[in-house]
Image (tube, rainbow, N blue to C red; front, side, top):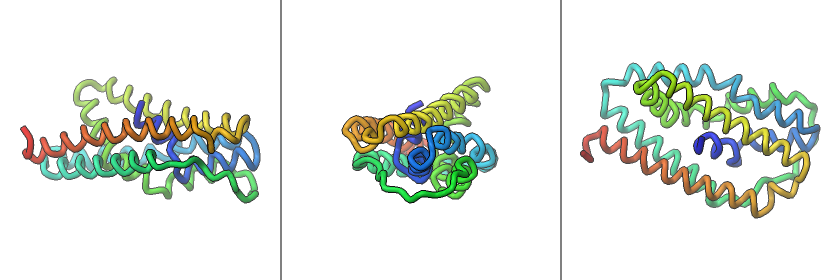
Length: 198
């Protein structure tokens, strides 16, 4: 849930598109963009799980992937701590919100990096415990990810000042701290797999 909320609220190409579509057109257009990860992420998830399944006996490679995921989360957390809000100065364009959202998310490196280094290892561990645990992880992640972006679309449509105000910055910075803590867990897992730590 923390990963989903953080990905949903953090500034990035998809969130910028949610805001711009909402400001240019309406809340419904912003919500269409927010739904893009549900359309685009399934092949990314399947490819990531396939790659991870092939590497499941290679603890060194999995350790390196975990360390890479820790670095990625650390960078995301650091960026969240530095955030100043969202630029609301946008150009007018025609409303093709869902297709814009799909292309933006599919061409962004963030979903690929997330699923290869963070999402797939967490999901694999969850499914090793119980299939329903894996389902709960993915449902919780996407509920929070899409829900956060829908919330931003609604808040943008009702009150544009929120995205440049203190409440938004405080929320992002709290989520940034949580990401840094999660990065520590991935570093620990990576060092354990590399047998640097017991």
